[in-house]
Length: 376
Image (cartoon, rainbow, N blue to C red; front, side, top):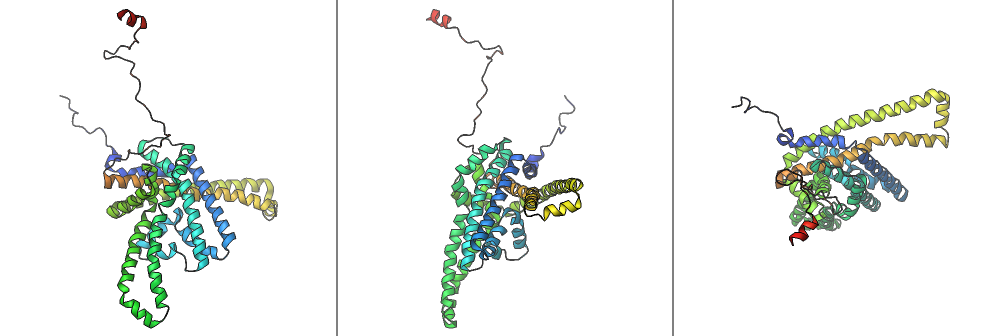
């Protein structure tokens, strides 16, 4: 009998600690196709802010603030404020002015559409990497996000529609109270209605704020519609909150490592660019170039283009890591394996290899037509 029969040959760490797959998102964020999609997404967001500023002027700050607060780069800040007891509700929704509401609507739709196209493509790439370790190309990822654009776009809008309908009830209470103190006495008798409505809004908003990125993971993995993504988002956040918190902590750590790496890369690149130009053109000419009406904006554009790699990486990492978090929560709640993913209709299927050997191990030879004719 072999003496090493009971020896432990190896440990499958990913089976013992499945959340280790989230660290792969740190590397996925550096994929060239992911960086390209994220960079385009960040540029489109910047274009939307410029359009909003041109259209709404001073109202843009009231509408852009909530949209920027809900962006991927500020998502963890909102979570931290909520956990510390502060009110993140005021950051998500604008001040009740007409201009602020219109600007908020514009920025919200612009951001959601951008997330649907570029975030959906990045989420699909990450889901394929996590699930089947298969490479999803740039063209295939964009084709997926465009095909499922309606699902991505409507999934975060439906909860906000429900919140808006409930807010109308509170608005009616406020309009009645506007008539005077005695009107407030009447509404105060029915104040329990306002309390229940506000609790309903909280039950809709809190899981939505914490879990809306999971909708992207659901659509990218299941190729489902917005109703399925919405139900999975609320179910996973409410049924496994501590698991979700653990995964967020791991994601925050992995994102910090990636942020340090991309910041170091960008900082070194900018330092090399500035040093090389300074050595060649001198200090006086450098100041003259950057103050020039034409040369200055051109060179500042290239500097900003390099600096934009940092938010681009965070954009890509955000959607990549939440695709992994979705797979882990699906495994915890639905007991579905991580490698279960729905392929697109145009995704190539790999058939079983052809059998070139018979049961005896010899090469199988095709039957001769002449032999068949003789037999017949």
